[in-house]
Amino acid sequence: MATADEAGGAVAGVEAGAGDQGGGGGGCLGEVRRAARAVLFLAAVALPCLVLYSAAVAPAGRFVRPAALLWPGRTAPPPRSDVDPTEGEDARLERVLRAAAMANDTVILTTLNSAWAETGSVVDVFLESFRIGEDTRGLLDHLVIVSLDLAAHRRCEQIHTHCFALATDGVDFSGQKNFMSDGYLRMMWRRIDFLRLVLAKGYSFVFTDTDIVWFRNPLPHLYHDGDFQIACDHFTGDPDDLSNSPNGGFAYVRSSAATVELYRFWYAAREKHPGLHDQDVLNLIKRDPYLAQLGVRIRFLSTDLFGGLCEHGRSLSTVCTMHANCCIGLRRKIDDLGLMLQDWRRFMATPETDRHFVTWSVPRNCSMKKLER
Image (cartoon, rainbow, N blue to C red; front, top):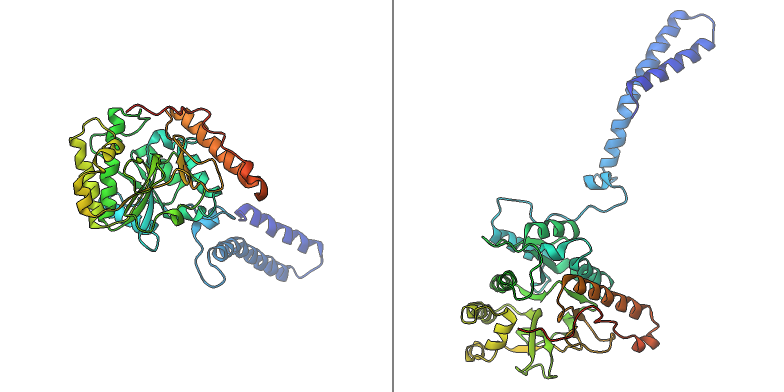
């Protein structure tokens, strides 16, 4: 935009040019000078305004988002998921679930606290796996990150579209929670109660721990007739065998009155088994006659497709997800998750005829010893 000084300088240049022409007509020349000065002043003020107006209005008369003006060539940042501090938690949850849901009212859910939300930590590896996997990038549109503390929620809003802050009165879920510590158990049980609420709202879900990498879209590999499907630390080979060892880090649950009651019963069972992990309590109640009366069909997912460091298939040609389970220590977990991504990139860069030669390089930092309960 031209300043007043620049406009004045331009007028002086015109006057100098007129003087060089020499010769008479002094009164007329004064009129010309005054007219030139007025025209240039109006141009200096009006032209920038015209440019800004043209930039703000598209050719068809459509308004262009201010973000497109502030950051040319970049898309606007994703909308914040929580914009109204006066909105109740239930209304916020409904809004976020509706925005993320697939056509069949299914959402993908994960939970996050500040220890796993730091830059370069678990959540960054988790999201990167969606970006580089087969038919997984689009699933990010249906992923809701449920943050368990304020720091995790702030990070979520920087890196993802669908974020939900889950408040728990009197409990601080920030920081690393050591396996089976009191804080860890509270966090896991809070998760079970939250998932019950999602089902009660009519949404089916795929729940995934954040320390799971997604290499392929797992949805086509789920059973069509399983109300409650869950990954395993050990898979016997029979998806209906209750002797399978369930792992709550990955599960698909179809919303129904029966599955809502399953989660209510599961959550209530913690009082009969104090000090136990939700996964261990599920192992204890999976044969309970009450679950059979509910009519919920429980099916267990093969570790060939839904693997982990506890047990996984050898072939990268079939794996959908890999879990950094059987691993103690955040740094070790992050390192081995990063190696999983390297293995995948190496697999994808290999000619198809030779891909069967590509094998896992994990576990390298994590222990394969079965964790003591």
